[in-house]
Amino acid sequence: MSKIFKASFLVALAVSAMPAAAQLKQGEKPTAEQVATGEAPATKISEAETVYRGLSGNMVARPWTRAAAQDLLAYIDRVGEEGLDPADYGQQALRAALSGRDQAALNTAATDSFLKLSAALALGTVPMDARLGWHMKDPDLEGAQQFALLERVSQGNSVRQVLDSLLPTHLQYGELKGVLANAPDQATRDKARVNLERWRWLPRELGPRYVIVNVPAYTVALVENGHVVARHRGVVGAVKTPTPQLSAVATGVIFNPWWEIPKSIEPEVRGKKGYVSVKTPEGGVRYRQPPGPSNALGRMKVVMPNNYAIYLHDTPSKATFARDMRAASHGCIRTQDALGFARVLLGNPEWDQAKINETIKSGKTVMAKTSVDTPVYITYFTAAAAKDGAGIIAYKDIYGRDAKVVASIKGKAGTALASK
Image (cartoon, rainbow, N blue to C red; front, side, top):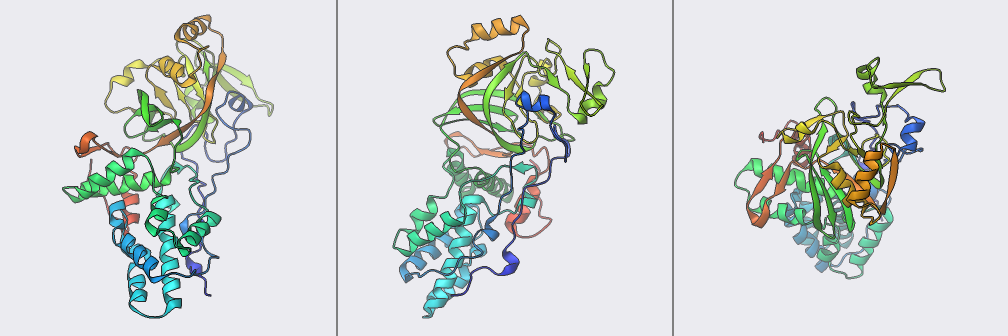
């Protein structure tokens, strides 16, 4: 049996580029203090991810019944409902194979279509170089899992049920499909398609309890069992210092934190009052800001180690939260009512508001543990479906990332979205 994918398609694309202005720059190692305070892991987290064109390079065609192949073709014909193009998934080749009597050709065409489509539904169709600033590994499909799905279909399981099992489960995904189906213009269709695609880049299940930050919406939300239990305004990275999209796990909160100054920010604080210089083992100097009312991190920061030293924290600059446009940080996410957010995030009866206030008043640096480890997803959605099918809520594409995604989906460079 011949292999399905040509060598030119067997491309593994890794997420490797650091954002130019994150807390940690390309090649910069975290300090011992950044590791100790939960800003960065001691060992770099691997972000390598093979995209769908490299997923199934060694897989051979499986036997297909005509009924199953026809069901697959029917699914492909309607995949525009997911914001995808049926032509990208062997639609015509499969149709031609079904019109003939060559079983081997049918097996090859159906297997090829299934592999491409299943990978796109689970992982997204846009290659990594078009996912600007996106640094999340999607665990939803790998080669062995994909082969098992193919076997299920070969053994008579419903094609539609198998493929539907790969779609994102978040309510917004289904609601954005409704927006796409009823979009009044091309600009709205493009917005819906781009953001449906971004949902496919995330894990299919985000977990029973998680924090989701949407950078273009400037929001921080804590979700439990599908319900938002806390929503806060956020201040995100400025255009020159964009917040990268990543996932981490929140394990605690540090009250009255020290700020370990990243190298990229050192020129802004060097020689200024209120900062402490510390000699490094290499003979250099690094800078810290002690806890207090003027500390840039405010009164708390979330412990969520990641390769970029990005985290959620308080701020003494409360006035910024009143602005509509809140892209003003060095990359981290300043969180409104940070102490209230900390209390809910910790979910620990020991850490009620009274104890948090008492700890803050003491001035001592204290770390509190969350009752459960909580995933944090820092995302970039430029549109959301409004409640009750009332259309779309568009957010400004502050980092200019939509155009490259929609151009990739459409398969032609240079396609631009209408300004929103």
